[in-house]
Image (cartoon, rainbow, N blue to C red; front, side, top):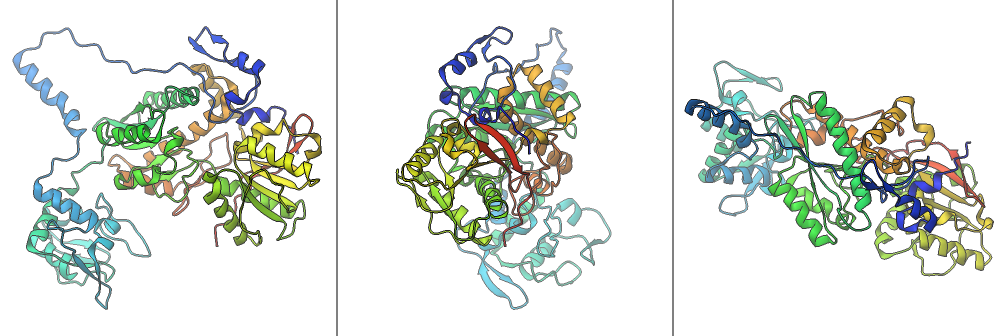
Length: 574
């Protein structure tokens, strides 16, 4: 066990600091032309920030007067990357085929049917569109022991000789044999295709449209993937209480991408970052997100800071299948969103494990208490997860100033409500153990009276003991190059982790990357060392890079923080 003095600073927002500390924070930084604080070791949460915004440099125009031929060549060669920035220009028939391929919808909007399995069970084609197994890019994804083949037309139909797939040999496809495969489940050699492949009942027009699109499928790139550039996007506030945090995230991302680009980028592509301000409310934030996706055409999102979109983010990303790598409080459950750090339920379950193993609490001793209606769904999720681990908590209880029964209270809500809960309990003569995530309540800990000493336990995703020499050198180099304050280390580490996971996954997708391939590559990341956190990794259905947290005891007055249970990955849900 080791005491860490400055842990309270990790998660305190700027507006909750005492006046003397705020005055230090807002001291002008002459070197950067920004407002920053003196450097002393301590941490803060994602709402802190200080660094000058960076801007792109534009290349200077050439002064040489070219000849007519040179002008033409320069135009053709120079515009090639420009043209490749846009999605494939599809004909009307190909667009209809694309919709059928991805959504199972006819050009006439009539409901199409598909037959599945040896029994020819009939289901709507929209339930099992081609893309559900072959992927939006047509490359196929192994699932349930079945490996759908690639639909690359160059492989299926071009050239002479036989092809081989899943142990079957067959000649090149033609338009008619492709139609027979789609509608009857038979390849050009007469071999029966796997019964898992649906047989679609298509009109002549629908089959024509689908065939036309499949011939172009291999040429279509996802937005943001150009010949020499891969474009990433993020939403970072330029004003308001999160503006300083936005500056920090931008500095970390641009520094990291600069380092990667100086090493040649990834697979010969330079990584480019597009930053937009989400504005003050959900409407402006949604508009900014749509601009990133539809006008700026970014390939993926990295470390956005737009909490007003948390409840809608998964819904907005799903139609575009856009991967997002970064911390969002309600990211659990979305296949597109990968959070490097554990969600609140996992952190609170680590605390529950400590309550059982070290404090001796029985199965019926825990209560789940939340403050604020926005926490209700999360509280119920925590209660269900506790039940899966053998606890028998009653229904989650909303805190409205009243004391709560129970030997242990698992709390979700803001710091002020946590302090009010502790006060209500003390006034009623009750002194249960209090369990909470540091990211939510650390700002209230210093105000608690001594009676709560060693009765409060906080979850921290990572602690200084996780930092290796190389990790510290990476963080120190970043802070020196960008003039960042070490007290902002928590936000810096979170962003570095997101960037590390994204870059590792992009390296695995290869030159012909796609959003779908990136999601698969992210799922395949395991035991990624950051030097600043426990090893990170994802998996099918797992979208948090860590499955638990360190448990830290709080001693008062002080406060003083001591790690009492190290991070151990929680078991998978039963």
